[in-house]
Image 1: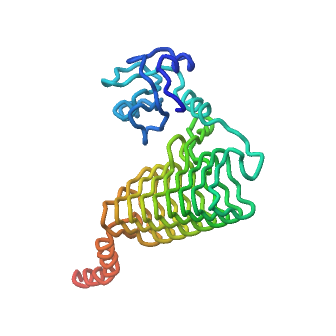
Image 2: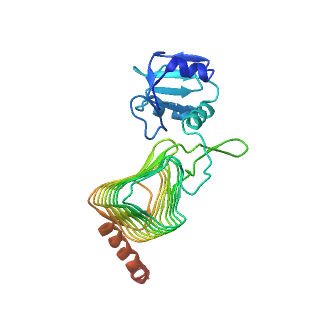
Image 3: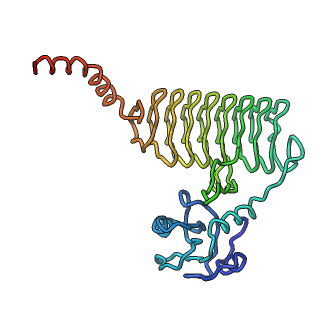
Amino acid sequence: MPSPIKVIDLATQLAATKIIGNQAFEITGINEIHKVVTGDLTFVDIEKYYQKALTSSASVILINKEVEPPIGKTLIVLAEPFEAYNKLVRKYRPFHPLNALISETSFVHPSSILEPNVILGNHVKIGKNCYIQSNVTIRDYSIIGNNVTIESGSIIGADAFYYKPTEKSYKKWRSGGRIIIQDHVEIGAGCTICKGVSGDTIIGAGTKIDCQVHIGHGVVIGENCLMAAQVGIGGKTIIGNNVILYGQVGVSARLKIGDNVTVLAKSGVTKNLKADYNYFGYPAGEVKRMYKELAALRSLPDLLKKWYKDKD
């Protein structure tokens, strides 16, 4: 939030039916349930997710039913929490069409190089000694650190692929988050990095990303990671430091990958991965175990032949 807002004032804006808890509490941020911190507002409108929302770090929750809140939580009760939440994100991250290649509200350090046809959205910041190649698009509120290279055709800050299902179709969420690219990051040609719905997508210092890589909304990648070509990372996944993902690795959404992990090419990551191990396969498993399983499968025909022969 640009400045804190009291619960009672927000509830009045949203025409809420009831406030349960501290009406004078000041909300300092808006975030989805996966990334909330103390002071944040979030929402829940499906009963099976009530407990997750109520026990999260969020201080204020938009909800469509009167329930007993945990100590320290404030509930704003209203008919359509999602619509209210989306309205707030739109209010504090309003849409402003870009009418020039480089927005007047963007900032580029004089030591950085921008090749022809680079597009910079509103409130973009680019640090020292960066090299942004031709036909790169950097959308609103993106923050680029120092000594960053982004190769031709990459898109930084695409909208989140995030929709709420309804009875008739899908309702698009407003993407109000940012992209933060830290120092000494290199991004190859033709990559797409999506901004968060309300949180940040972060690429850690020293990380190197190959061509044709897709990074979903709200992903956090640690320092000194390597991402080879055609890697795809689902939204909200958190990746530690010194992680290597080889070519065509696919990572599902909302996972955690520990430090010093290596995932071999064409693997599919469908669950959290512990730190300091190498992984392979689909679903990805620890390399030594997976190789033993493959060896066992290769020997299975001979074992079956022997079994049938002994049976005869």
